[in-house]
Image (cartoon, rainbow, N blue to C red):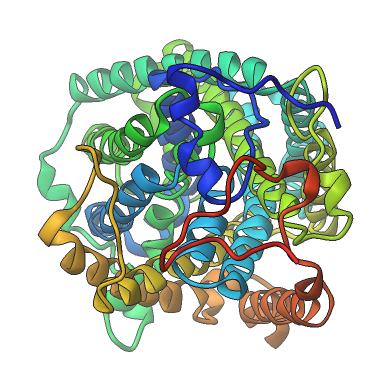
Length: 522
């Protein structure tokens, strides 16, 4: 293992919290304030999320599904505030895993990290599938399988396009964080400009007022509890967008002044996504030529862009969506690598010594990069003839991320109630007296939305034939097997090996004392 030169001066202060975990600095610190912000907002990705599942939200809840956007924002903003406070205190790789371990216990930390790691792999596949919703709308050249009308044409072609994107993110991440950051920053810059331009273009083509968001299109008729049932299903479309803001903190070991930059990046990323994404959705509904027709429920926002802007400007905008999807997948892959690295250096994964090894030149963990890419491709192959691949894969990924987030907010709340939570000092971000209330809301929201997402509704998990009970209960079964099987492996096998690997251990002084001190390596 090739070690990096120990930093001196201001940069050495960035490693204080890292040393508190018993780790020595290994990853290369090159990311500035905007790089950190770009990582967070590219994971959320306004154009990716809003364009990928608009069709589902609209089909499930009509124009009134728009209200799920502010609802999800309020809940996730509470989670983001908790994460910002943690990022100010512990800006380390594998944020969710290390936070849960630090404020909870090593067992809970492992489970939260495991759920987040698998969810990230699933999310890479889910994001990559968004290529299918955009590229064939630009040109039929990108529909390699059939003409798009066959039973499996769309699903199979989606897998091919997604596989190309995953290969790209794997290669870029293997060459180090600097190349990733350059591509990511350029992509985010283009995405933000395109988002603002799209909002303006929608605004000048308005054909109806904002009251459009009160129309339900009669979608509540299929549910015993009326429109509430339809709305809760449709909220999946918004829940898919607003997560991943913790990526800014997960890159903390590669950022400059992370205890100040990471919290700001987390909050700015989710607020910017809410404002810009909400305007896109609202103005799209106000500017589309007609709210009737099947294409709104099948082609979604891509159809609205082409309908409102025309083929030339519309396709130019869809190319920007293509760029947004690309950098989003890149950011998700990057975050997953950091999480795998963080768990491996604690000897908490099989073959940890190899997984935690950084490339001597690129100073990035290459083996996790490749393995995560292969696993994401495997998820695509398993679903290659699944017409419901978009909503099923996406739903499972969201559920597991919400569970992983609860693995942080719940122990954080317990620590507050016991008077053991110690926020960052020195003027860094802290919720102060609002911390307890914010934390309670974050936990209640996370638990309620997890139940809503995992509920075995046929509308989400088995909307089209063939109808089977195991498809409807697929999310429950998959999440149960991943959580139960994974934790059983940890408890009976890996738990006895846990401890910071010698090559990654901070050697200067003894671990700090305190209620959240890292456990000594065995």
